[in-house]
Length: 567
Image (cartoon, rainbow, N blue to C red; front, top):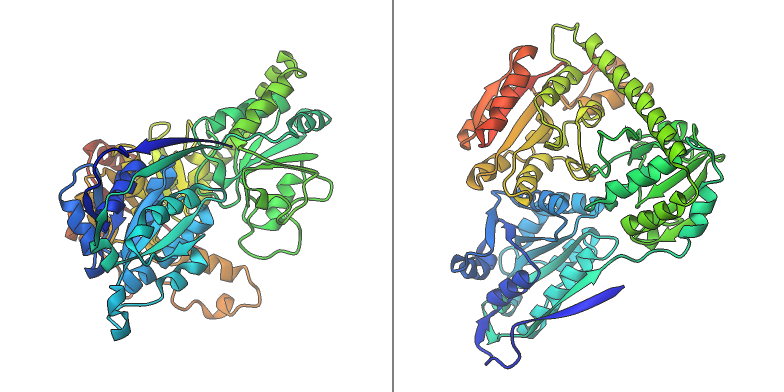
């Protein structure tokens, strides 16, 4: 691992007096931070006041803390940078904890801070004072509260470094109000650039062993935490040389491979049984990244069949042998390791074999796409709008590579296969599973791409967790098109219950799963926050509405009524 130290500021310059809040901003500048995502309260006022006089760091305002955290999550995943979040003491941290948990599960680099009450005031039991470090400990990689101004620069630097170190994730800092208001000498702030390009020494052995399997008998599973610039190109080279289809994680956070590539086969199922059935078609599996084979519900079997030889490359050594034992596990940067692996394979695989592998992959992908197209055509016979038909019509309006954020459980199984991505990190999904992520994450994704258009596909249940993000989208002028698939229910929960023969749902129905008394008026809700809206009344309107909304360059909301579970 190579570290290059770059000095920020001049040691010879006279040390001026500076407030703690301004020290925070100095560190953020040196880390390349452009945005602070937050919702302010009294304990954050020193930082808010410091931001009033600067123009190089923008405060992205969420009307509720979970919305602020999820916007930061989307920004970090889309940009690859560490996001910075500022919440309001115990209440704000509590509001944001579900969203922070999402970030932890998805391994999103994030520095989460919360203003703490003045430490000199603690004995008086001030309002909303609490053990913030203890509150954050279960959902953060590391948490800390400085007790002096001198600690602040080092602690902030440590927080950024920790959040970016594998496994990446959110860290938490409690920032006492008196420290942010206190003045001291301006510190010299060294910034460190860490190049994580280590390559495991076992790559030649891995190449030799992979070539023992016939072309087409190896499968690649590209996990959640490997998306980086050019990683899909490296995966594609290895896939062509081995004739290996590429699957995504069973419950992804972003796409790590272009769906237009002939080797792409979509995400794995979300049950161990379903995963095992697919992996069982192959003799060998090459896993990339960590925790790729997530089973949402329990099934009594290992997702990797006994007759499938397993190899694993991950940047985090804790991933190796975590739940499964690979024949060979390699700790190293996935992109760099795959580039060396491809070079090893190219020495022994002929161009003719590669050409044959690509042709076979194209035929298999075409068959897969035809099957999905036929499924949609059958569903199209229903006079109501089924989710698969809604997604088909939505995707028709999208150019290849359109940024898409997906939190519509009724359509997840169709959205990713139909959405055409041309590179990694163009499709985003709620890996953490705590609802309310998608709408605010879309604002962050747009900001990460210079306020590019983003399509956010969201269920009505998910939308009701974070409607405040509509206001933030207008306030930040991010052209997010929110498409709500409204079935008036928690359909995913109904489907689960109907598949459990021991449950009462089969004969007695459901409790707390129908959002209909009263019905939610999403048109009025969106307009109240400054978002223009439309409601689809027929299938033929969908594509045109999507095209017009994306072309407007402004936040828009389109509501599509879709069929209920079992109808």
